[in-house]
Length: 370
Image 1 (cartoon, rainbow, N blue to C red):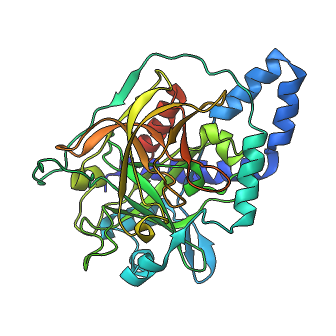
Image 2: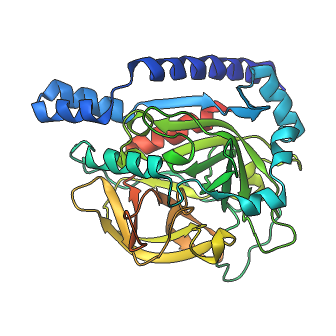
């Protein structure tokens, strides 16, 4: 590994630790921010908007022998060379992956209540119209033949999350960036939200197939760094419930996008667009197979989120990509949203944050991180 890479990793580690320290001492809750908005102060609104899009980053923590551990820069280099931490990867056996539960499964009253409060207290910040802008274009995987009428993308899969009694999962997808290491998911799939912590032992399995003998056909990619908006980590706003993560190579010495390709990323434009939405909802086929749904989406009332009705997705679909201009032949599209939340009961709709230029900055932070 080149020295310049080691220096950058050391900088990331120090910055991440400092960021976490600030988050635990200066965080303002959603009620306090809502009070600021009600005061009608232009200065307060500007400050709230800046907090909304500020970025929290961390080296992905791991759980070992009941204790949370964060790699040093030298340890990150070793994990990269090994194709992931053997202890973390070994935890996710086929049996544990099959037994995992969606991270926001029904009955988790603490999480459901926190999300409901966050949604109720969400700042009524006006969404500034932005033109459609493309951060990156889709790219096909290396050495994988295109498939005629491919219905499911191999760049989308399950994001497994350790540190829970049974293990948990979200959905996620690879994004094409310069580093070829980045994935996109929901903010609550990497961080618990206000007063919470970063999740541990995250491993991405593209095209996870729970019914197959070989459930990780393209390998396992351990998460290296995680990046989310303070609008989610400190305030719990669903309009900022999106995250990016960088990943280590798999055990075949492949970077994520090299192995499975990557979607492009588009921001701005209208809340109305046609989306092909993928994910692993627990209520369809027990979350063992990826699901696909194509819908016309629109703004969710006056919120800064888009809504899709009729997919019937439940928990576990969180973090799944909303792809614009999806091509079945290429198996790629442009990420323009991720599944974030749904109704308190039932499966009548799902919703995604509206992607603005701040999402580009978040993607760029993940691309630079490793």
